[in-house]
Length: 131
Image (cartoon, rainbow, N blue to C red; front, side, top):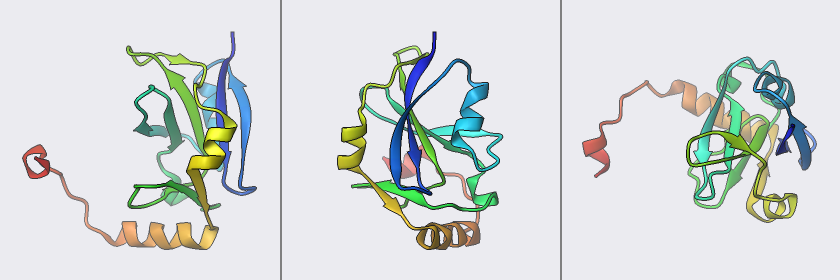
C-alpha cells in the first residue's frame, strides 16, 4: 500500500500530493540527482521533512523556510508522516497547511546560503554548550 506524502517543489514554488511504495522512490521524488536523503525536521505530530542530504553539492534549484528557522533548507523537500517508532505513514499535514507555513526562497538566495554554509568550518556541537 502506498504512503501519502507532500512534495515541496522549489523550482515551481508549489506543493503536490504524491505517494511512494518504498524508500527507494524518495530519491526520485526529491529529484536533482538525490542519492542520499535526511530528515532534518521532525514535527510534534511526527511528520518529517526529507531533503537531499547532499543538496549543497548539486545544482541548487531554490529552497524553503518556515517562521523561526535561522536558515532555509536547500532543494526540494518531501513531507512524510511517521509513528512513534519511526515507521512511515501517511502525512498528517495538508497542502493548505504547507501554503500557510512554508515560504519559498529563490535560487539566488538559496545559493547565497550554500556559499555561506560551505565557508564555515565544520564543528562538533557539545550538548553541554546548548544547555
